[in-house]
Image (cartoon, rainbow, N blue to C red; front, side):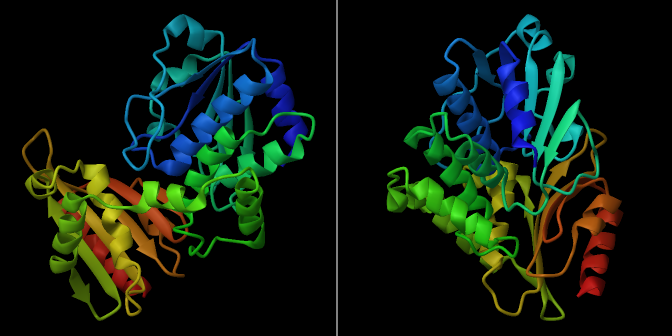
Length: 313
């Protein structure tokens, strides 16, 4: 990746707005706030804003900035951890004077004036760690490193995903060297509430298994709301099925009502090694080879996806 070009883009901009995807996870918010903080600490005259309406409740994060259209129109927009434009949390990014994409998903939808995409990286926080560490003349603070470590730790599920590489671990070591309290950060992003603990039991008890190696859960809206969780938070429990040795592919689906009164499904799909993102893409979703998402599935779509996932095993 051409880090000199990325730095030049930042240096040339007086106003910068930073975006990430809807339903943000820690890699999205971690890369966004780390980049904002790093720029502010190194160029204190620049106007840098972290934009977005939705909130990440996994861990503790700053509030997003409220930015008017005039600022966006004269800004460099940097979109982090977002594979396709439909998932950007604030469509005003398109009004920006210049747009950069910084991502680690397969680049099936190129967008922006310049793209800095490395789909071999386990997280955008890994990409930014490499970038910041390569700029030896600039400040790389503990605060910036803390945001990055949260994203790297969670996107790799404690360095257990199959896209974790020696470079991923090296980046973790670079961040740890900034004096981070690794234990506290791990508890912050992974510890559960009592309600969350109880919901884990719900997910496990409602899991359906097909041919021993495929598992899935369907969660009606009223059920996850009874535990104080929104739809995105409920789907994040897909990881609770990932530690079962016999499950090769697993998924969590939310049910909700469409405007015309029919049931539709949103889903998070996972696998240990089997590529599944092409199945998600067939239904308007996408993601990584072994971690993908889909939205707005009809009942027919939902049944077809189950069949395709079982066949893939």
